[in-house]
Length: 133
Image (cartoon, rainbow, N blue to C red; front, side):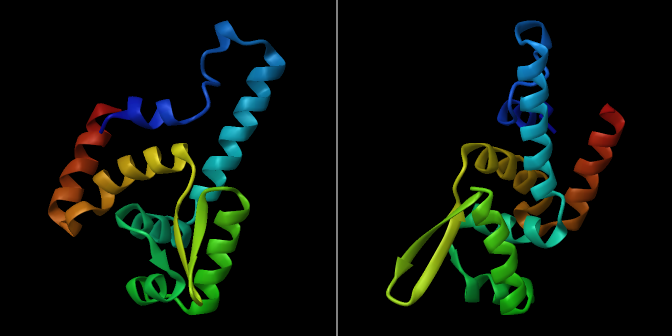
């Protein structure tokens, strides 16, 4: 897995030599809040589907097996944080990934964990990642 792609999508808080302590702390806090939003299996599942295409609440509920109120609640949190945006078509609201960091990180996560839905391939990639650490 290319950690550089994942890290490049986060605020550049790790470049401490070029930043004062206050700016470093602020960027670290922003990155932590961003990652906290991603640290939820239901939200990641929804975002994984939105990495493939724009989806309505009903589409996401059907694809994930989650109840509509649960999907709506999770999407509301993601929208509040600016990670997803909406588009209305009649009475249907469609959601898609909004922020560039969310798109880039989800692309890496999607490629690693979701694409192809091939359990053996995912296990092999995870094994390679573990060996690299």
